Length: 128
View 1: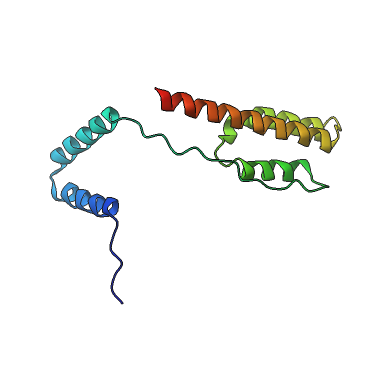
View 2: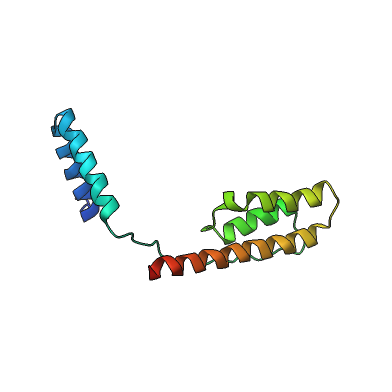
């Protein structure tokens, strides 16, 4: 069975690695510095905007499962940025006995709000 042709980016990467490995240490350092210079100078290519991946909300759902569902619905969001708010809502449910349905409703608003901010930031980055 014949080998599949390698895509151009992978082929260029292999060539570059071969050149890099053939160089003495001092020239490797120079090549890396030049690559860093070019990368810093190059215009940033924005990642394509991602749409949410809808997951139906079950009739009975735990708060933890809701967070998992919403994380899967909005894979493009940085969950670390939402950790404080998400944890606070979970604590209200677990520690203060707040109804799961209410907390899940707020979690959905939280994720939707962060998604709208993500979209707006992407538009601003594209216009710069």
